[in-house]
Image (cartoon, rainbow, N blue to C red; front, side, top):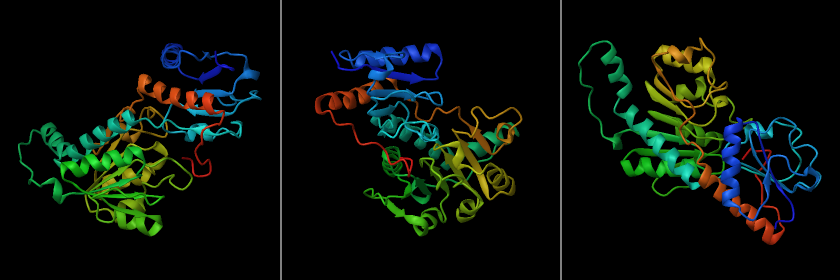
Length: 310
């Protein structure tokens, strides 16, 4: 029997929390996973949208594992103890993201948005054909999801570039880093895919300055975070024709409030945060490995860099 209970802390619906509890217990049959354990004994907390202040009062807490890939909301809570925080890194999520990125990019490449508008207007007109190799696609963010997406787009034949803060490299892909590298990466791109983590440095990165560097009539895919988009700049760029179309999966408020311009804008495709959904079974298996390693070694796993946010 494990020496201390594992806390599952969420603000999910009762049904969703129960499903996560079942998945985690199935993945860790030797652990005691509870939503209301003896808090002074808790060394490990597994969280998904935990309520603000929910991690207070855990004197024995050694580390926290998020069930989400994005942890910007968690890190905004000043009451989160100064212990290692892990975000979910799940290869199945990277594959799901790559597939969704490829679907969005291929649809924009073959101008399905334009054909949809023509259909609504009762217009039958073929657009000029272009091969994928002649279309420049830039990916912002080259973590596991970005690398998987870049590899799949490269396999399809696109001219792929990538940018990351760390200077990550990918075989067959031109990669850039830093402020100067950012402009090089986005300049002239016809489709821009954002997969960056949300940090103070990347807040509002999809803005007028970035849009001006893209090719005229370019398209934007945001599968990162809603805070990456300067919303008024995006609407202005679409209205002016600087951008042709935007595929958005994440928003500052989810769902966007009634009357928000994204709902009715002909140049926007809204997805309900479905680009890379978390799979309970595989995510629980990832967490279980981390917990088992800790039980064997007694050493808390290395967490993310809170200053950078990932």
